[in-house]
Image (cartoon, rainbow, N blue to C red; front, side, top):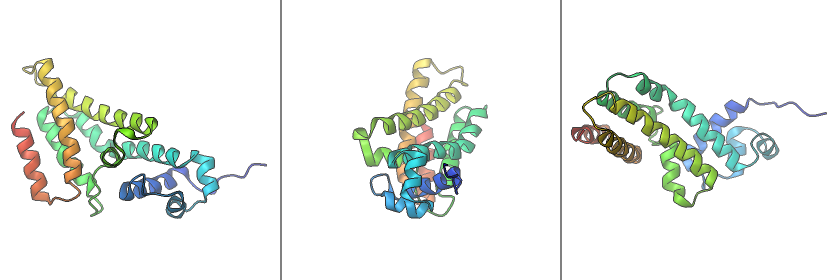
Length: 187
């Protein structure tokens, strides 16, 4: 007879996500996951397959968590102003617990680079594709922008978001605000 799980998968993934967010993928061991998640290695493997499975599920959970600010941008009718607010919302999101963690996905890109496992790359690319699509949709609200300008500006904003995420780990609020204000002057 199979044993029932004595834990809530969503709760343990939230804990794992926080650990990966603080330490990165490579610096997080299965032992650390056991301790943080409060479950044993067998349970980790039974529920998620392996460390990579836990990480992939952590990224999906992160995407759900950040949905509060992506939804706000998606519903915005303010074009560039809405995107700018998204940047400010992201800073608040990434520092909400007084810990400058940046973005879990950006941290992963910085840590693992192009040599990351293909499944991880796919999940990261999906995340950035969604954010870039939100930027593109908001930019298209300005009927004076050509399709070419919209694509170039969406690419610029996506790259700016990567920079902002990394910078948010070390810079103070004023420096981050200055960055956002200057970035949006060219749009």
